[in-house]
Image (cartoon, rainbow, N blue to C red; front, side, top):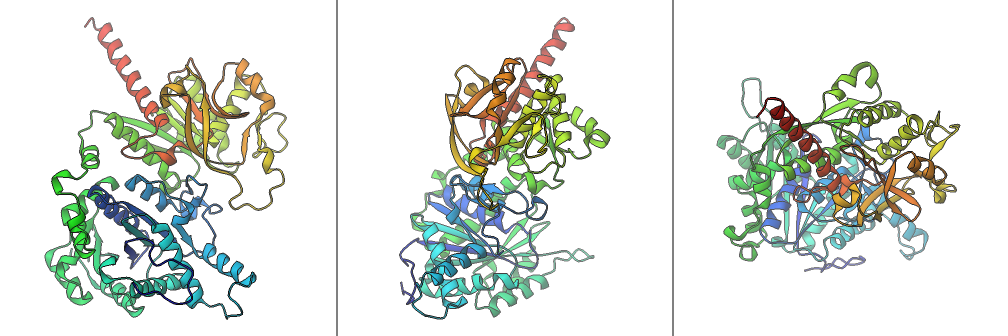
Length: 553
């Protein structure tokens, strides 16, 4: 392979590269399309990884408001990244690192630091070649050791902030053998009022892409239904690709059905043929089928779970939603997530919460909506409703218990009320001198020791677990004895840090300072979420048995 002069990356890193771009509008689902392609390649026996390019100037996603950008996903090494990395981890069942997320802020910061250190030896530092070289280096290093690396370029073709990345991809294509590079472009195919599938948005999007010097090898049309053959032929004609390279990605009931849909379209076979991987793939009858078996199984019931949060946005709690869905796959039931707004719960949402079979209080920051969360936790505790608290939900469970069981009037978290007389939740000692907000919390994977004989030990099947964290505050050690004397059990800890709480005399009441949802997978559901759903099912079985007994059966 040719090597570009004056670069600092190793061109031998990585084998095959699939670049996924999007056109017409954002939010089309190019990330799910890319993840589904990766899932099918894994089923065929290949080692697959992924890179998400985010053209924003933030170094990472850690300081972004969930209203604007959705959930901040935390990786094992503590990287705070875009939620699409969560989809890649769930679909590929691979742990990513912060190196798998490329942002403009990260790239420019690195290049400027090198310039300040004199690494460029007096050269004029420019977008080309210095920024584009750094982008290419990051992609190749993230791909190291894998058969295929899928790179999703965030945003839409034509966005000014994405131009350096598309230029880097253009250069990338010249530096690699043709059989090692594949460009996939995902576009919108809307319907006209008379029901016709319209190709003009796709034509204009591809025209914009080609003006930059990139010719897509594959086009994926996002539409309510499959693309008609005439639509595919028209797209192929005007966009200069073979008809067999135009694929449908229609709306499906659940995102975990997308791999099945694109497999039915033959996307995986076409990708393997174009990348010259067919001879290395497993025979079709030997490929992994567990994914298909899981997502197509017949369910035996359903469970309603109230998710009590303050962000009226599904993307803000996407990992919690998916972890509940995984627990449903594990227990063979449909889990229906019911949104409960903690900010106005007493006035509008209390009844909705009471109709649920279980309650989950997720993480978050800031004081807004926390009193509603406290009330939801109190309701779950006093009425034997299965409960799971995550991070802030764990902390609010401590606050609720301190107030209503221990009798500590005005107890709160110091994060939410600096003047609270009982700061049962206080800032981590190492956070006292921290001034910068980005990337400074307790982040990433930490091991928790679990007390034998507890619910947590039963859930995790042992005396330790490894989960991901994202917090600045923790249980105040000065109040631990009082809380435990009143009946609250801290069943998991890391040294003197409390990590798991539970109530022994409750059907299911557990809280975790960590975020177990970040390690949940469709094929490997998170233990606390599985336990929550199982508790509901066990309670339902007891109700059935009691009814049968009352009827004399």
